[in-house]
Image (cartoon, rainbow, N blue to C red; front, side):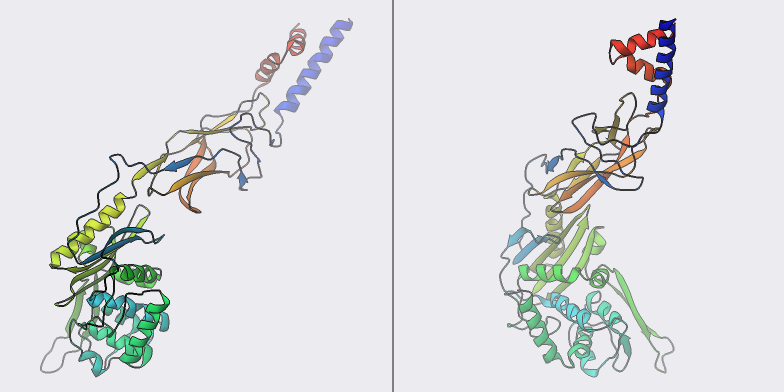
Length: 431
């Protein structure tokens, strides 16, 4: 009789234990594996996870790429984000730089004037020599229109109009250009005019132009303008006896914008004295580059060598697998009564371009409460990869398999594995 009562009592005890175990439990901070310690928070909160980080470096499948052969007088290339030197050939030589000068003209106009400001075009502007955007004396255009005429069309007339709008006169504006060059540390640059017309005292180095372009491209308006392939100014009204207006439609002088889908700018230049020059930029798969070619003997040479530089620059950042799809990142506690861990895996592979100096370090964050039930594929966190403090890519962490609430039988079976006392209680419960 006493044994029967004990059995009944044991049964109630087991039921009580099961009820308690099966009830929703507050998340625990204990880990079921050495991989992670979970600090669960309410849904949508962000919680750090103590998971050992992984570090990934670039892999060059066939060794370091060979640099291109450059025949131009000078060339230089940098990582536009970091300023790291990627290629240098006669980079500090003071050379005539033709219309690449207009990068500085555009910078000063953007710093000094509102895009919507209107400017009346002077006779001085339209009488300049060299390439023109067909401005008409007395017409009124906005600063934005003049910037497009300057950088897309390479209009010398637009450079004069902008200089007069900023400083009142060309000489005063040129003083500003040289002062700004000094501020930017361009030690091998000197300007005599606003557009790059031939003058032995007007020069720049390939290195200086690369860093000038880097500064300019930080302005989103500048970046948008130099990445424009075609542009039109308002038609010139017909003057009798003519009956049709004169259209002013232009293509960008930068052929790389049409040849390379990841080219993004910046400025061409050519004169008999400077030969063929180009400041170009490109962005692909997170890699941003600026390359400069000065003094190419042929027009085709500058496009060929600038393109070769950009492609070489990209090859210095090989596509590297940071993490594969379905990789097990952590096994974490979900307050399961029968001690089943939640296995978190990556939802997709992640590749990124890394330089030979980059180290991508992983960082895991849980994004929601870890409580039962759990569905396979449910997102519970992210894994970020960071280079020099900047996140270069992320993947979601998902449940590898479902974790349902356990049944009473599952709990009893689990208790049986804990020792003879639980086995004895279960045996009495079934008598």
